[in-house]
Length: 442
Image 1 (tube, rainbow, N blue to C red):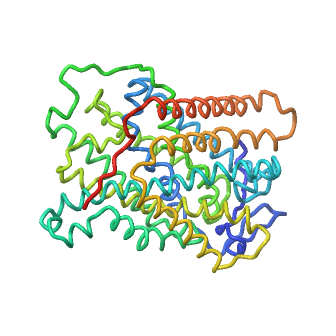
Image 2: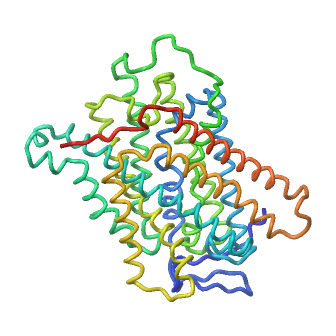
Image 3: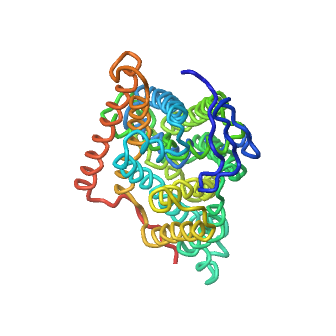
C-alpha cells in the first residue's frame, strides 16, 4: 500500500480543535496529540485485552499446531485490516468509523455499523465489570482473610460493593476523558499488568499440585475438531478495530507511515504475548485447560491472585476505551449536527457507566449472549467492513486482482460470523450447565 500522509483529529467530538489539516499540501499540522509511544500503549492494550486469557483454551479446541498457526494468521489479518481502515479514511476523507461506512454505504451502512460497533463496545464494558466482580472479591478474601471474617470485611469485600467502588471511583472518572491519548498512562499499566499475568502463569504452572496439571503422559493434540470455536475466541481477543480510529486520531502528526509503524509494533508485541500464554498454558494443562487460564490455578496461590487482581485492574483501565467508542456511536446517531456540549458528554457517559454497573450487579456471567454478540460484532467490524469499504472506494473494476484479497477477507468474515453465531446458539440450547457462576461474597 501507498504510505502517504493522512490526518485525523485527536478529539472525535464535535469541536475538533487539536488538529488542523492542510488539504492542499496533504500535511497535518498539530497543536497537540499523543506520542508514538502513547499510541503504541493504547493500541497494544486494545489488542491484548480480556480475550488473551482464553487463548490456551483456543489451542485446546483447535489443536496445538492449528491453534498456533491460527493465532499467527489472524494476527496478520488484523494488522492488514487495521491498515486498510486507515487507507480507507484517507480515500474517503472521513475521520470516524461511522463516517467512513456512511460515506461508502449510506444511512443503511451507518445503522448497521453503529449496531455492531455499539454492541462490541457495550458488551466489552459490561464484561469487564463482570470480570471485576467475579475476580477481586475472591482475591481480597485470599489476601486478607482475617479482615474478611469481620462484618466490615464481608461488606467491603462483597461482589456488589467491589463493583460499585471500581465503577464509580475508577472506571467512570477515566471514561470522562474525551481524548484517548490521555489514557496512555493507564494503557501502559494495562500492558505491564498483562506481562505480569503471563509471567505468573509461566512461573506457577510447574509449581502447582500435579493433580491440577495435565496427567503424566497425556498427549499434546496437534489437530482437533473445534477449529471454528477457536477462531471465535482468537478473533475476540485480537479485534480492536472499533477503537482504532480514535487511537489513530490521537496520534501526533498522524500520517499513514507513523500509524502503520504503531500498528506493526503493537501487533507483533500482542502476537508474541498471545503465543506465549497460549502455548505455555496449554502445555501445562492440556485436556484440563479451562476457558479462563487463571481458573486452572488454586484459589490460594499468592502470585496467581496478584495476577487476578492485575487482570481485574486491567479491565478497569480498558473500560474507558470502550466507553469512548459507545459514546461516539450515540453522538453520531443522535447529535451529529450539534455542537459539543460538556453537559451532554457527562450525561451520556454517566448513563453508559450506570447501565454497566446495573449489569455487573445483577448478572454473574454474560455467557453465550456476549459470546454471540462479540462473535458477530468482531467478525463484522474487522473482516467484513474494512475490505468492503476499500472495494467501494477504490477506482477501477470492483472485481480484479487488486481486490481479490479484500473479497477473500469478506468471505472469511461472513464464514466466521455465521458459524460463530450457529455454534453459540447451539451451545446455548444444548448445554444444560451454567456458563459461569456468580461468586457471591456475603
